[in-house]
Length: 263
Image 1 (spheres, rainbow, N blue to C red):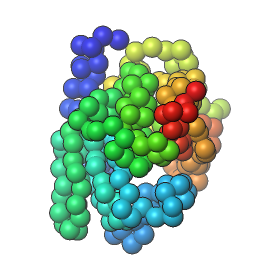
Image 2: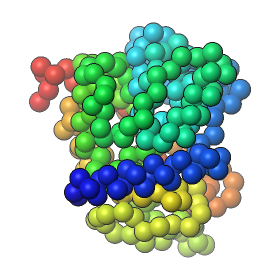
Image 3: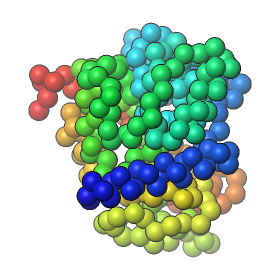
């Protein structure tokens, strides 16, 4: 991929997420009152970050990466963390700003791409939390490299990704199951999909194979400590039926290896 192509992808996805935010799409919905009742649990349901950071998020420096929309950043701040939110969409960041202002929370906002964190100092975060978003960049490896740079030694990285199989599969199930429509070795943006829970209209998305999602993370200087495939099979409607055949997401918990011991 060329630099011009990468810029085109960023601008296309910036515009798409601005439009999704303005339209109030599902993935741009701010945190709810019930979320704020237990904010640490809402953003760290497995307790990965709290256990890894000494039992609390209070006072920890957390980067919410590609995480605008009024949920991740405000909840981490409500749990006591020192929060920076990075997102390419000004409209998504405005949602964070509104929620934080309404609740008297302090968060730092930066409009930037997840693969270019040059404005953030090296080693400046205890943890990085990244919801589903790596599918919007052609190459996940620069993202991992940037996360490794801004994390301190032994810093924690929780990231969620669309599974490769889910991005290969048709948007909807049939009585026979789910058809794989895209090659596992597809390169370039994925074919557009109709309305569904697993794809976002107007965006350019890319399939990243397991050797990149897992192997690339290890090669970037991380040790993977846990992995989950959140289940959506109990959800009503087509999304739940499809999820019985294809797990839509994978969540990774990794630790940044100390730089002087990196292999």
